Amino acid sequence: MSIVPLTDFSRLCIHTITTKPWPIEEAAKRYSAAGVRGVTVWRQWLEGRNIGDVRRLLADSGLAVVSLCRGGFFPSADPAARQAAIDDNLRAIDEAAALGAPLLVLVCGADPRQPLETSRQQIAEGIRAVVDHARAAGVKLGIEPLHPMYADTRSAINTLRQANDMCDRLSDPQVGVVVDVYHLWWDPELEAQIQRCGRAGRLLAFHVSDWRTPTEDLLNDRGLMGEGCIPLRQIRGWVEAQGFNGFVEVEIFSNRYWAMDQQEFLEKIKRAYLEHV
Image 1: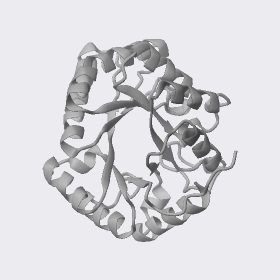
Image 2: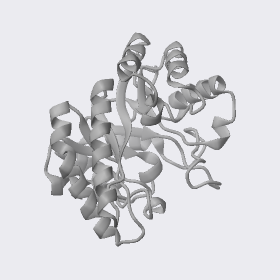
Image 3: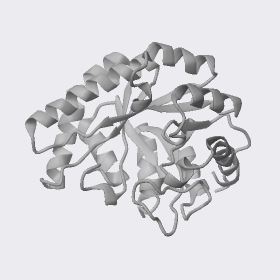
């Protein structure tokens, strides 16, 4: 399959966590000046701010709000904690709607005190508890499977098959999946499960970064595209073969890159996006 290289930044989206040192005002100004056209906002960038003002700021900067990150973290052995998570997700849906974000990304959660299957059952229950509110708000819910190294506390959904199975189980068009190459590149079923997403019309977002070798930190050492071993362009071809033509979202957690000049980092992102995605 021939994959057409990206030649401009019309589909480039950057997560605010990627340029973590910048507040939302600085990120909006810098992304816009660099020709970036999309932004995924992490919820901590909304703290202490009027969401309507942030929405206007991003619109005035020419930035499409691609999604709000993150909801989820439904499972717990403690019933009160499960209810608190549901309440927080209802708030997150309201924040997404106020921001104009069509999607809330779900990092579904896990609790090491209980079996993974119990956590998965609680994830399904949590999503069912909030999906009608999401529908009324016009916000879709995207289940993001996380790499198995995070199965202890961050997510009991660790493969795209599990995310697809969860969507089948919920059987609600308001719920879909988020494909993040950092979490899924290793999976021998990845292409087949992306095709399954396409057939069901549930592929909602596509996140890119790279897997550095050796990885020095299990959370905060993601690579810039082209720095690692992920077949980025091939996977982009798979999602686009299923009709996905949305934003390509750069989501990088990196102590190394957060420590450098962020404008220089932004220029590196742009080059890597064209050369390797």
